[in-house]
Structures are given as structure tokens and as C-alpha cells.
Length: 479
Image (cartoon, rainbow, N blue to C red):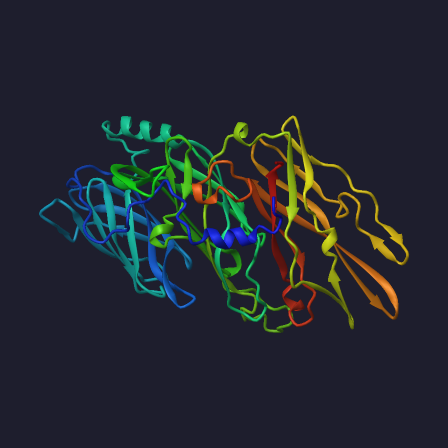
């Protein structure tokens, strides 16, 4: 195992992970039966948004729709956007086409007067959202919620769909591309993660951490697109087989607290063995993370200046989690070096001690729980500290193979001279991550477990931001 595996992550960004190709976004009227029954629908908003000078598709929000009167056009819709929620009420259809698709144009309630153009047939919704406080037009795509429908013919379809993908999934979010938008060069290098628990009612409970420590917690409906085109890799060749089958998508969108940006993407679930989670990366769809930057404590007006802002494209490496697939008698824990990080104290500057960064530490498993043997206290030998002992970083670990989640602490040391005397500084830093035993073929060379650790940057030029730098950690099986 190579602890500085981040090189592998860069290589992955050019490879399609295989096994799943989601339905392409709506470019015309989706085929389907005429709208005939009341019911609920779920969808997502997206747009092309520039990333480092090039357009990239990005999820910008979600929509839930409830049609209560098909004939008259009575409906309610609720959108979740970066600027907050937006509600719509409809009382009459604007038009009906020859295929039986109903259409309506609605204006949002509240300060955001964005206009929703909505098209509905029996199985799908599509349309657009524009104006108001939006920074550009958004496209809507979605489908009927077959898991909560009251129509009797939906019952068998809903149960079969749930049985195919219900359960617990783990997903690592390795970076594909990062762009720091401020002077602090703050884009995290570590790997965030998500867990998804898909229940019997077709709702995914999502939790996790982004690589800067931001907590993610939300519920999202599972969207079943019936008869969408799928592409399955043939193992021994570069050929593909295309078939018509149902596809399942979990839209993820979260406005970050403090009005600091947003996080969004489409996670597609593929039933079968193994059950994988992926983004539609062959079409340029990744998980998008935008952090506009925090407020500087040194700014008396507390205005946002974005010096620690960044934008990132993230991959999705993971699938259905089975503790049996991830159980081993021993694992190896390692952290990448915090390259470029120094410790500032007055006029003195110290470099981190590279030999003390955890590398190949044995993690034992007892009754499914992780453990690292305690390290010995550092010894001062001939005026210098000896870091040659096992676990000089005093690393600890907490976690179980039942969930695949792990976290802990270790020391990062900085040694420097002040007035001719050795100064020894220690930062006790936290780390966390997740095991992803099920993943696409392109991720096969990545470690079984990936995560991040954070250490505070004391550079005086950015100290007011209280910036914590993020670097990768890995937990892999011992070879």
C-alpha cells in the first residue's frame, strides 16, 4: 500500500468507472402515457456551470410535486435551492398536448419570483426554472414516485424496485479536480464520504462528511426512471451492451450553512451483484462542491471576502456495504504528508516531521472493532527527538466493520530552533473515513478505506480564517 496514494486519485479522473450509465438529461419530451392519475413526483434541477473555464453539468436543487386533481390541474410543488425553499401552487393547466402531457407555468411565492415551467405525463416530469434570484436558467428532470403512489398497479412495481436496491451503502468522494478561488489556496486534498440508507418507502437517508469536516445530513427520494438506457461493461473487452431497464437515481443537494455555498450531485444505484453507486462521469457529471469562503475574523465588518473559497469536482467510489466483504484480521493505516504546511510561532518557523506521519500502522480487528497498538512516548536523544518507534504519532482509531466508518487522532510534530534551542510542537489532529469494498472497476487500485485528516494552518497571512488543511488518510488490507 502506498500511503501517498493521491497520485492514484488523479489518474482515476480520466477513467470511466464502469457498470452504470444513467439516462441522459432531458433534451425533448420524454415518451410516456398521457397523465391519467393523481400522484407524487420527484425531480432535480441542473444546469451547465463553468468550472475552471469549461462548462460542467451540476445539480442545483430538487423538486417534489403532488398532483391532486388531474382534470383541473390542482397541484403543489416544493423546490429546494441554494437560496432556500421555493413553493408553487397550481389550480389550472395551461395546456394539454396531443400525447396527453399536461403543462403549467407558475410563479414562486416569497422573495424569489422564479418562474417554473412544468410538463407532466403519467410517468415523468420535466421543464425549467428561471428568473427571480437565480443566477441562470435551470432544467428540470424527474419521474413519478412509485413508492408512495395509491394506484393499485404501482404496488408490484414499487416493491420489486425497493427489493432490488434497499439497504446500506458507503461512498468515498475522491477529488477529480480542485480550484481554489481565493488567496488561501484552501481546496481540501483529503477524501470525504457519504453513507446512504435506502428504506422500504423509497427514501435515502444520507449522512457523511466533506473533506473539510463539513457535516452532511439529509433525506432524498429515490427516483425510478422506467425503461432508461443502461450501459453495462463486458468484463473481458471494451465492448458494451445496451439494454432497456429501470434505473434508480438519488439526487443529492445541500446548501451549506452560513451561506457558504452548496454541494450536489446525482448518485445512480445499480441493482445486481455487486450493487454499485456511481456518477454519470462519462457524460461529465460529477459531484459538485462549491465553498464561497468564510468570513475573516480580522474584518471588523465581518464581510465575506472568500479568500478561503474553492470549487471541486468529486467522484463517487462505493456501493452496497457488506461487513463480510470488508472483514480482515488486519488493516494498515496511513496518512499522506501535509506537504507545504509549516508551523509559525512569532519569528520562528518549523517544518513537519515527515518520519512521524503514520505509515503502515497495523490496525487489528477484534469482534469487528478496530484497534491500533499504543505508541511509546518520544525520547530525546542527543538533543533531538527519536521518531523511529512504532506509532510515533500516537495514532488511535475507533470504528467497526459493521458500519465501515472509522475515525481517530494522531500527532503531527513540528521541530524548530528558537534562540539556539530546540522547540518541539505537537498538533493532535482528527481524521475520519469510510470503507468501500464495493466499487467500480476503475477504482480497484484505490485503498479499501479513504478519508481525511485536518491540521490547522498557522501562517500569519491567513491566520484570521482559522483554516484547517485537509489531507488524505487510507485504511487498506494488509497484503
